Image (cartoon, rainbow, N blue to C red; front, side):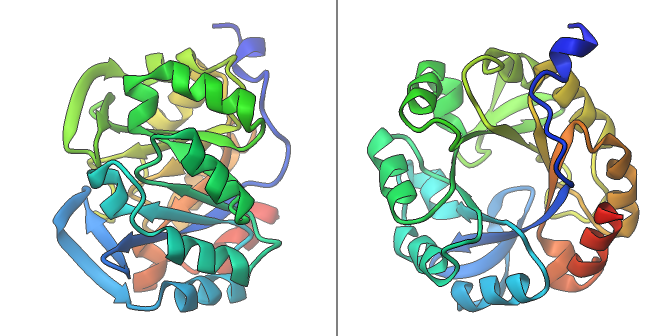
Amino acid sequence: MSDARATSQIQSAPMLIIPAIDLKDGKCVRLKQGRMDDDTVFSDDPVSMASQWVDAGARRLHLVDLNGAFDGEPVHKSVALDIARAYPNLPIQIGGGIRMLSTIEHYLQAGITYAIIGTKAVENPEFVEEACREFAGHIIVGIDAKDGMVATHGWANVTDIKATELAKRFHDAGVSSIVYTDIARDGMMQGVNVEQTVNLAKEGGLPVIASGGVTNLDDVKQLKPYSELIEGIITGRAIYEGTLDLGEAQALLDG
């Protein structure tokens, strides 16, 4: 792929620090490597947690319906919509169990800005294209990978599809961006996989939101030089446990 193609859809806006609010059984949790039986509960009030991050300077929120990802249909719609109602002017993206156009429509009508399609994007790429036509500018593809191979169904199944090949598949579909998560690092506080994240952005030619392994300000510093390729950094455990200060990290990216 030429450099021109790789950067054809790159945005010039400042890179964002995006707090993750992972929803399991009505609570805000963090998992380790996507294992549902290895969770840490940080709050039983997700709306209050959203308020904490907004007050700290968040300009976008990343919601994940963990139960929905495993069940194949949304479980935490009401919680997500409560957060959207509380912050009607804040961009919010949500993933987990989105398998139908009607689900996307419901979220968008309720104030959610972006719907993240993960498993369905692997099983039925045409669904992504249809969603992009129906809801232009509001569709994100979530690519979760282990050792560069795509995982689905809440990371329970690892396929033989390369993450970079899947990203290329959606280059011309109208996807707003790709959330790329390195499963091996997610929730493990081991540092972000800069090389694979940047490579995915270059190969796929779409803006990427980095996820998985962000631990401290050093990780943010490593990603900052690639602001033309990476539009955001999702952080979870690091801000919950205090190894990364959201405001300080965003200030670094703004500078």
